[in-house]
Image (tube, rainbow, N blue to C red; front, side, top):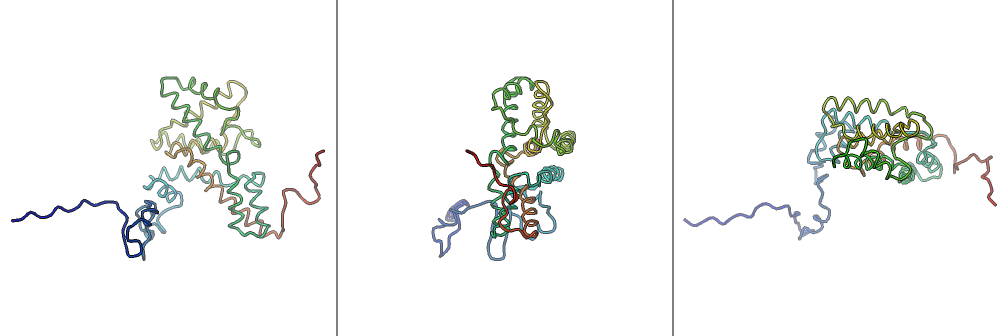
Length: 276
């Protein structure tokens, strides 16, 4: 009896067709995030029809970024952070720009894009930077230093501005206490480990001991949540952008209903100072 020829093991090579005979084009755009074919839409391997009506937005965000759905308690904590960062009024540059852009005839998509594009290192990047700060403290602690000593070293080496702490409007950010209470409860329930919470509170304690109380702001609190949930630092900014986009859209839409055209940053009867 002759031996049967050995079959080749399955590979992850892209599919071929008459249009793309080598599979080179399909491979160029290969992705694990989604799959689309005639009559098929899958998101992270799950048919979209199974997600519609059964999956909340925060769970969907986690699924798309991480590949697996979160536990309900994880989704709830993520949602709390997303809700907290939605808006901070027209004094925030991104909101002001959304409102001005909405009066320039570029449509809601242009107004939202204009605003989102201002969320850079100075306005919108503090959450990412705070995760990096807390990560450094925890790495220093892992070398054998006590948490207070690790915090002292990292803060001393950091540039003067500490991201995630203090607020130019609020002596104590009203979002701090409810967010940190949720993190504390999640630590007690075993949902998150609590390491970044310890590091954030250590920075607060260090600042209070050296000068005056400088509580965490929204960027610091949400940085702790995103890091505790396992999101890397760059996604802390990305998630903030998603959150703030809701407020941006609301302000842009409101502005379009008020009938102004070419709205500038100051009322027309106030002229900027002339510098010699």
